[in-house]
Length: 531
Ligand SMILES: [Ca+2]
Ligand SMILES: [Ca+2]
Image (cartoon, rainbow, N blue to C red):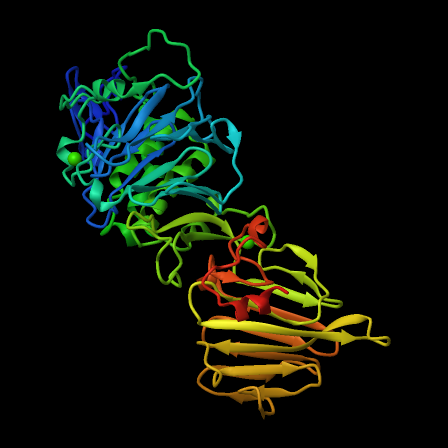
């Protein structure tokens, strides 16, 4: 409960403490509200047992270290978030650049991140991605580093060191690979699983003074002239608030202590996020978008810990996200490494589980008329060749393959039509269904069946006088209208990042739909896919 006395006149610096702390004596902060610690309540430990050792820096002022120490930092410059001090092997560092002019709205201020790898040019993540000042198209590979776009995020994976996710505006998440246990320093701490020893300055001093610690990691921005860097005592964001205002701020941020957020309390502590939310609301005068964004940070931490709070935005209507692209839907947890990814070669030990954002729901690829294709991601093209092609298949497994046989058709045989479509599961000819333009439904490429037909792998039905549907038990279905020359192939979310063929790479990015020709294919298969 509150420790202040309502009958007393308000002392001007009641909120001269951080993180929900209240000044009860000129030299004493009561930090109990959010279990904060430090002389001015600058820190909150995240005791959640399932935190995934991710360092997070969001808004302009919030950092939670790899080991789970949250602190408010009021810096307006550039800072080293994480750097390795491994004696040998690759070295790298990640810097964050705050907005020196940031005023009321911490999530709309500018922010960017620089990643430096030994022997490489600066990789700069802002609204765009640049390498040595040149814009980079994603996906992109450079040495052992791979860059990828996923929903609104840019993912940077270093094969043996870390994965970094940048949300495009203010938040950056970094997860180190196990070999780096204890081998980092910077604002993200030393990554040794002990939250008590994270505030080590760049001159090796363990301190409990957040301001001294943060200042020691300040860097000159790449194009900033050298000069004196300011180092003033940080000012708590709620310093000037009235008691009544603070009651309202607490009440709104303590939404994180109630349903639906309580479903995650056992895994990730909500207290650092409740505390950071109050700072954000004091700074932004209670702005609703800021409030939603502050709550979203806890939801992200839960999703990253494998406990996504599905549907929290529908329960708090104000926080609903409307996707710009009509075909996309909002998803709390888009897998960074799909479950279908076998072998998990592209997924390193340091993988961040998932990110939130607008993404393609189950995807549909279509082939219509004179062989007009629309890929899973919505890219359109025409490809009127007559041959057999792979429409789509799992890139990493043989779980499904859908092939297409085109043939000349039309009055003068000058058009091209789908002659047949086949669905093959587990590369097993006994698990094959073929629909032909003549109207036949064939099993194993030879036995005719009449729909409705069901076995352990397929369900074949006539949906209308013209549409046939083949549904599989692996999240793939085909709709075929032989008279109307229409063919639709639907795959569900488990196939994100795991399709190739004429339907493209299902990953929300139309740019790479023609890029992948996976190497392990044998020649016979490759010829099927492209002439
Ligand atoms: Ca530590
Ligand atoms: Ca694609």
